[in-house]
Length: 170
Image 1: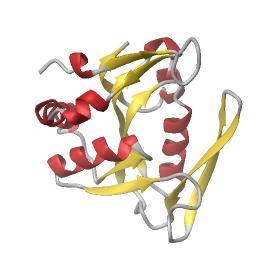
Image 2 (image 1 turned 120 degrees about the vertical axis):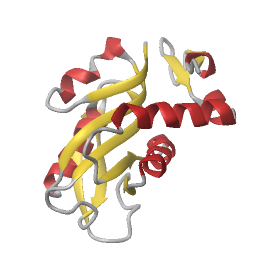
Image 3 (image 1 turned 60 degrees about the vertical axis):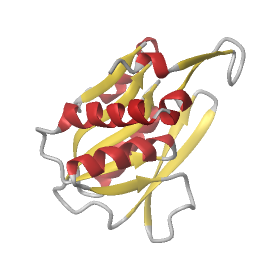
């Protein structure tokens, strides 16, 4: 199934000059959502993966679907102060300021191979930080998987040391 027809362009959101790629039509259509999950899982089915990590919040949706198809556990990577147990935290640079994400300290076992999933690859800052969290926890990166890649923002360049794959590229 061609998924690009389920991605809606929203001009000037969240600010003027931005062409937002809206995935809600994809999420709303059961057949498209199932096809998306299947296509994501097909991209990585032959890799050694011990668990799948999803990045808050839209990444949770796709990471869960991939984890179920691969019969692997799910690791949430969240914004600060959302996880109840001891965490590792990484701060990273945004265009205007900084942000942070966290993972439970016991989420990744030493040597485990973790697949990271998010809905969108833009500048790569969040995914790069997520990779750092997994490595800090003792894991290795099986790959970074996205539904959409905004190629003109060159996020892939920040992820040069890991396999990167996206279903749709703009």
